[in-house]
Image: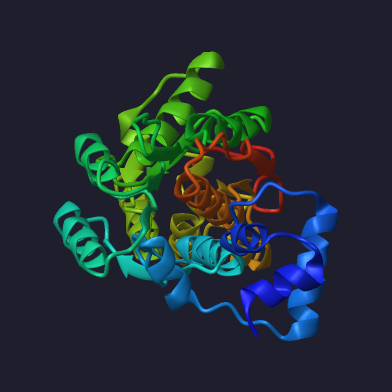
Length: 332
């Protein structure tokens, strides 16, 4: 079964069929449906190797994530796969582990595999290195506001998300609000700290460094950071964690201290992981659509591969209020 037979059966040109299969065609829904029907009826299976040889491509896209087993990035990777696969592209995943040297090795490995483009989910690689990479092949990077030829950058409004979370606690009457930050070497952690500070400032509340601890974005880090706050006698009635994983760890530390959520300490996270709705109590959090992040990044890559300039953006943050946050009852 050949591409030409699909073209004849669907009433379009072979080049149109090829562009539809590559995800680069701009055609009417009727033409796309006709091609889909012809493919299904004829049992046509595209040959990615032949297509790659014909177009000088490997039909593969390298993806540098930070941790393949991350509950946040794992969902984003699914979104990338779901978007690339129908266009005939395979994704090759590697983990940078929030280490710039490791990320560079990952990029070298992917380039040795002759990937057609590269998606980099956050990470520590500097802007100059990303711009240089984009001169060699199309690049999509998340967690950055960056402009360069051959590069598409997608940034989430972390400042506003953190401001929403902190403002929610202020509206509930909390005045002593602790913050568990991520690794402040990374922009999104700094932005979430900035959003926390902005909400305090707008409410006329002082920023107190003694109420801020770094948890490094992991569950055990959130637990240990909360324990450090408690051990030094920090007074707080609410805690905003810069991601849900740290909030999960914080809830463990609070529980071991005999503190109830939200009766004694209100708790708010960030990301809205699937597990957040199934905590006891369910976690209030800021929704960041990781599946949409992956899909949008992959679509940006398809646009770049087609020679188009992506005009894409991520959804604005939304506060999801659940049972872990409540009115300030007493001071700690």
